[in-house]
Image (cartoon, rainbow, N blue to C red; front, side, top):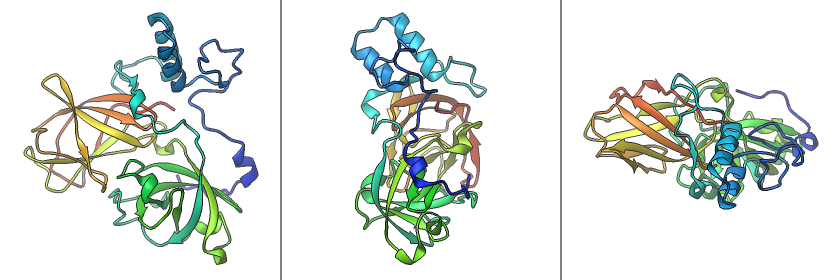
Length: 289
């Protein structure tokens, strides 16, 4: 939620995001890539190194959490899709920061209504990448400190790394009179997803003959949405305005397979179709930290 406490930039610069508590490589034999922590990237390294099934299962249980029921835990088919990994968790980006007054309504990510509990930000065209980072939660740092912000809009003219902050948020990271400043940012877990599942919103005009669906409250940005049809997973095309659209899905209910930018995959079952474009439908699962 909105972060009003401004942290010292120097302190934040030494913090990194981890999928599990950090341990030394000597303490954890499952640290396959020897980076001093155990996370989803060790699963990838383990597979490539030829680890046996028992080792992979133990590592998966440690990194992802043991599978539980659909009432809120991880699906037993929770996997890692290596081809979808955009970057390691905690990757720091740099660019220039400016400010504007939009994004709570009518932002390009079409996340309306956006809660005023969040500071919001527009992201440059390159990093936004056809809505791949729509709904991303960012830790943004400037010379005066750090705040967390939700990506709700696009900055078409910005260079890679650039952000356009909401006008009231900019003074928390830099003197407003400067107007354009150097910033750094990284993707962090969405805090409202801590104890809540992903959810869904259908686009106006949705019927069993044409469907536009948006995934919300995802802990990390998502890169792929698929539905199960005749025993096969079918990818749904994503539009730059952050809806996945199809003429083939039918009347539902749907089994969805969702992949985030770190290759983490969850399966959410029995999601009903809704023709009410104001309804937010709760799912059953959430991505791990």
